[in-house]
Length: 202
Image (cartoon, rainbow, N blue to C red; front, side, top):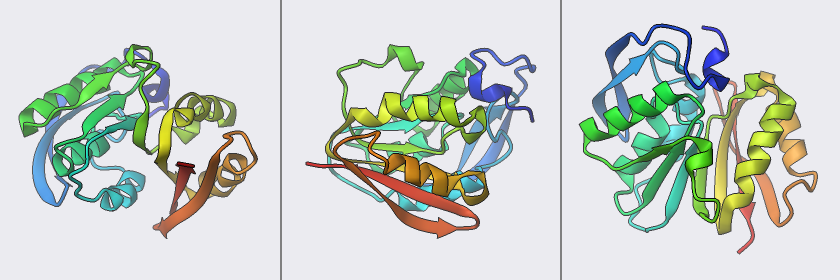
């Protein structure tokens, strides 16, 4: 699979849809995926490391899945946290369409949007992401500098990054002062992936 799905609004590959069975929020569910979106055949390994950190919660608030693809993170948030408003953004319009379809199928509410469609004044109690590392360091930094400052006071962003694709250098960059008022720590390491958690002061 080429990297085109990271930055193409409309993937060139045919929109051939299929159903797969995956485990989300502790249950087996059937979702629809398609060519031209990230990890169309399964839950990506990095995402699989991140998902167990999403705990059941009764609190309200807005949360964001950044780079949602067909929706494993956003759907897990919606299944585990029915009182929260789950937002999901991606540049890939096919991915957003799949996520909307999957959310409706599972009976949960997810606001799937292109990045420019999200209210600029909205602040998130949490951001969850398996960020598109392969778009390159500069583009990745631009992406994170756009969204991480939108954490609400006391909020946290959880990013899963493969160790051999630069998790340690990303950690150093996040701690270098580019995001004033935040601190970054390593939450967990598993299967060659690290989860970095960026916390904003209250």
